[in-house]
Length: 219
Image 1 (spheres, rainbow, N blue to C red):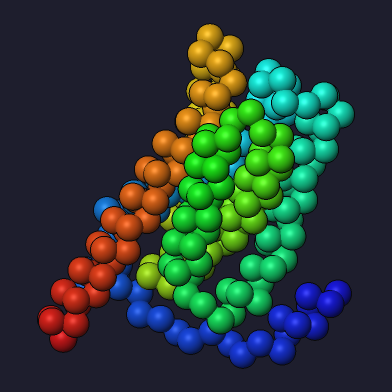
Image 2: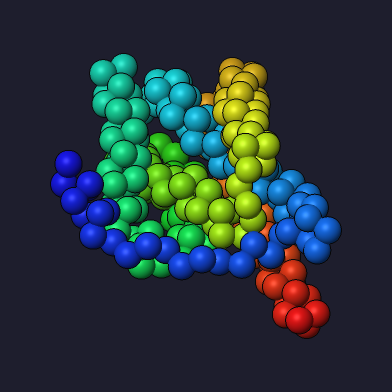
């Protein structure tokens, strides 16, 4: 209820030009494909970390099963709190800036964990950082997509398809490698995933800026 009373006071968002719709009414599929992959790798990192954190902690001999359970719960708790905190932030900053900060925060957190792999304290800190960093990325990406294109049911379905694919493929990959290679393979997969996602986001913003310039030149 408190969140409801806060949101109802906010002004209506400005109407943004949908620059991905061409003159003939066709969608910019290149932009859509980039967004699909962005959702794919984001959800893969989120679900992969949340699902395999318990196993990673146990196999790394960092804590008991009870502590590993608390650690996993702490990840989802920080994720939930991050979503709530992201509501007022989203009303003040552009979604693309929020996504960049989120991914940078996630990358710092996972790198810290990899630098001190034998420290349970660092794992706690990194897990909290990842929870907060991942929390507002998905809704910010959806807001951004809605500002640059018309989110029809078909387009939204493609985004959800990419999200669902990432939520299956990345955790499966971690499960296949964590036993033969070792538990630290999980953190390396998450790191590579986040680096790819950061590159996709930078490419997306550069592409959208180029498209905006082309549209303005034709007017």
